[in-house]
Structure formats: C-alpha cells, structure tokens
Amino acid sequence: MSKLIQPLTNDDYHAHKALGSSNLKDILKNPYAFSQGIRKEQTPAMIMGSAIHCMILEPHLFDQDYAVSPQYDGRTKEGKAIKEAFEAKSIGKTVLRAEDHELAKNCADSILQSKAKIFFQNGVAEKPFFSEIDGISVKCKPDYYIEEMGLVVDVKKCADASPDGFQKAAANFGYYLSASLYLDVLQSLGHKAEKFLFVCVEDKAPFMVAVYEYDIMSLEFGRAEYKRAFDIFRRIDEYSEPIYKDTMNSEQIIQTITVPSYVTYKNNASY
Image (cartoon, rainbow, N blue to C red; front, side, top):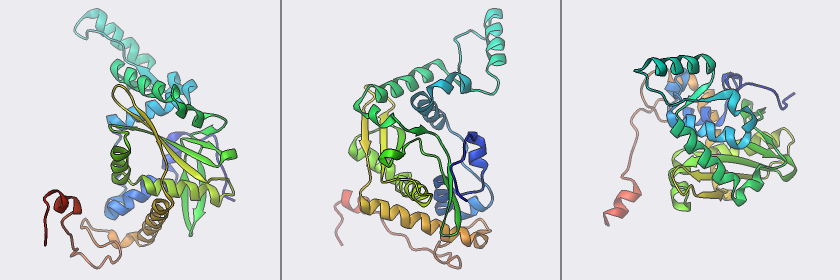
C-alpha cells in the first residue's frame, strides 16, 4: 500500500529506487547517462538553495545540518587552531562561508517577511511521498504541503524572479514536469492536491520575492512530459551506448534540428 513515509533522511530519499522529478528530467535529457547511474553533482548554487530551504522550512534543523565557517588566518598559529577546532565540531555538516550564510539568511528573511509567508503555515515541510503511476514507482518530497488547502509550495532561489525571468528559468529547468508530478503523486494517494505554487526569491539585493503558478495547459504539458519519460524508462535498455538517439524511436540516430525561433525573430529573418 502506497503511503507517506517519515522520518526519512535526504540521502535515503534520493537513494530510493522510485523515480522523482529530477530522475525523469534526467531521463528525458540523456537516457544513456541515466542508465549508467551518472547523476549531477551538487553545485554551490544547490548548496545555497538547500540552506535557504532549511532556514525557511526547518529552521530548527539548521544548526544540526550546517556550520558557518569562522574568519581566521590559516597562516598563523591561532588561525590554525581555530580551523582545527571548527573542522572537529562540524564533521558531517555542510559548511557555509560566512558571506554565503549571510546571503542565504537575507533570502530566507525576505520571503518570511513578505506576504508569501502565509504559504508556510499549517502544513508539513520536506515530507516524502511514494506511489505508483502507470505502473511506474514514483516519489516526491514537497518543500511545503498544506493538505487542508490542497496546496503544494516550492521554494526557488533565482537570479531573476520577475515574471519574464522566472518563466524562462522554469522552462529551462522543466519545472512544469515537477509541478504536474507532485500533484499527481499526492492525488494518487488520496491526498488533496489542487494547486502548486512557486515562491521565488532573488539572490541579490533587494531580494525581491514573487509567487507563481502554472496554467492548466502547462500542467498538462508537464504531465505529458513525465509520461514520455516513463516510456523511455520502460525502454531504457535501448539506450545502452553513448550516442544520442531519438527518444520516440531508439533506432533513429539521425535527428532533425531547426534554428530556434528566438534567433529568427531577433534577426528579423524572413523566408
């Protein structure tokens, strides 16, 4: 019986064989890399994003999971002692530079001091859900979920949180797939899930905040995309060599490309 599982560490969640939205996007991007177990390494931007999430969603866990590096001169005896003491007490924690900690705090405070703070009340944070859709084991871990309202909330740190800026980033990162999958996983388990919100904050002053949701057409596209990933996953053995193939027909290695519309538009091309 599919159910909500808690508690579960972040590592345990990611190690679980069920497919999450990141797995499905990896499959769509490069089935071969996925089949070989090649995953994206955590970047400084991802670490910063996780710190912001913790400050907003689980502030009581921040000191347990993160350590802020003190200022010291590693060339001096005193500095070396400070470094040694810090490293000893921060074993197993994610270390943040003081300036990165300050930046993460500014981002978190900007959200929590804005009207968007109402979307982080009376719900649960970072709880994993596991289910099955179309015979495929799937999972999701909403940043924040308010079942009474049927509301899923996703926190995003971004360079540009304006409507135009975030819309471009959301398209590039396939956020439409994530939104559709999260809602469908929760609904498949009998939970109320009607709306998916992105609460965004810019990573530079004045740390502007914005709240967005996808329209129905975008969610339908996201659903079609994760199901397209399902189909590739069922045929993953067909992508066992390092060559890009058509994802609809793995026998096809010659693929047709076109000049992007934004290029022709920018150059006022006519043909």
